[in-house]
Image (tube, rainbow, N blue to C red; front, side):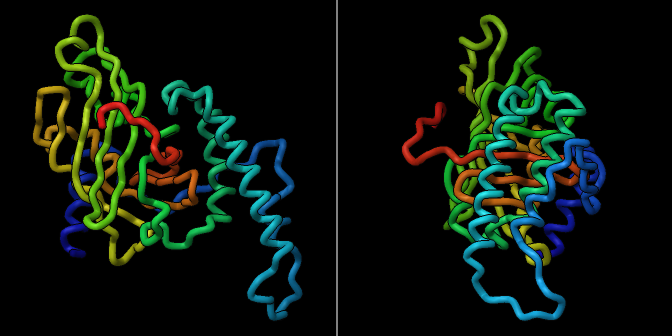
Length: 262
C-alpha cells in the first residue's frame, strides 16, 4: 500500500496538475486588525507543570463559541468569492488566516475515521490556481471552450470508500442542449497508513452527459488525488492539497438535500 501511494505522489508531481510536492504549510500573517488570539483565550492560563482536569467545561464552552464565530466569519468572507474564482490575493490571505485559526481547534483528531466525513459536501471555496485557471475542478473548459463550473458537490461514502463528484457546468450556446450541464466523476478513496489524515482518491471514470471518458484524460482531477483533511465537524470540512496554502473548503449539505445529477 505504501508503495502504491508513493507512486501516486510521484505521478502528481510529474504531471504538474497541482504543482510541486507539498511541504509544511506556512501560516498566513495576521491582519493588522489582529483578533486577540481567541483560540489562546479559549484555552485559558495553566500553571507550569500543573495537572489539568480531563474535562474543563468553561474552556470547552469558550472553544465552542470561538469555533462558531470563526465558522460564521469564514462563511461570510467566502460568500461573495464565487467558490474562489472571484477571489483576490488579499481575499485568499484572509480566508487562509481564518482557516488557520479554525484548524487549531479542530474537534475531530482523525477525521477520515469519523462518520462526519460521510455525506454530500458542497465545495464553497478553493484557493487552487489550477481550478481557477480551468474554471472548474474537472477542467471541462479544456475540452469545451468557455465552459464554467457553477456548482461542485462531493458524495462521500464508506464501506466501500466510494466517492462521486458532481460538477454542474454552464456551457456556452447550443452545447448545453447537446451535453446537458452535469459532469460526474466516480472512484474510491483510501486513508494513508503513514499519514492518517491524508486521503488518496482514485477516480476511475468521468461522464459528461452521454459522453464517457477514461479519468486519466482529466489531469485537473489530480488536484483532489492527495489531500490532507485538517478540519472537520458536522458542517465544515477543510482540506489541503499538494501545494502549500492551497485549500479546499466544503460545506455539508443537510440530509435530503436535492443534488442535481443524482
